[in-house]
Length: 216
Image (cartoon, rainbow, N blue to C red; front, side):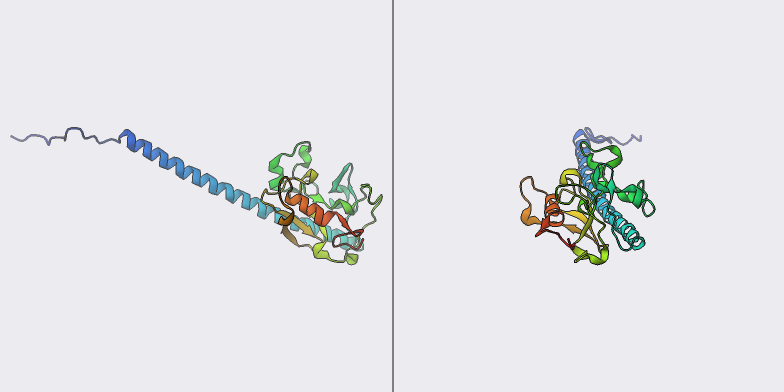
């Protein structure tokens, strides 16, 4: 007589609770690693996009200068000294163009900044007719008169109040020669001081009565 094969006592074709828990733990670890990797990739992509944006802004400003006897833009938005005038820049790069917006700064949601201005790159307000106690009026700065174009800052990914940036001690800065560099001055970093303060100190403050890179 033939009998069916006997199934060993205590054996099951399913997973045990321990095996399930181990599998879930492994899945969670892998998901966490992938999330971290994707986050770093996104930040890097935003940094790269920021550099590309500033290059495009630089081209627009140099085109403006070429059409205006080599004069750089010298007017800001009304009551917004760090934003170059939309009226004079629109023919070269319209205000609604995404190139004006830094994806990193925009994601910070700066307090007190209008939604329409979130993430906008700042223009060197020393080049505009902004009354700040240093110059009551700034005539247009001529590119041909700039002493060191590679040191003369035009714009940067800095937020209002010189805060923002990437949180890694660097800021993207556009210079008058059209180049963009990631700038850091770690000798001045520490405590609440950021790379934005360093860029402010090195490129927007006057030394001996002159703005760095410019002839005045």
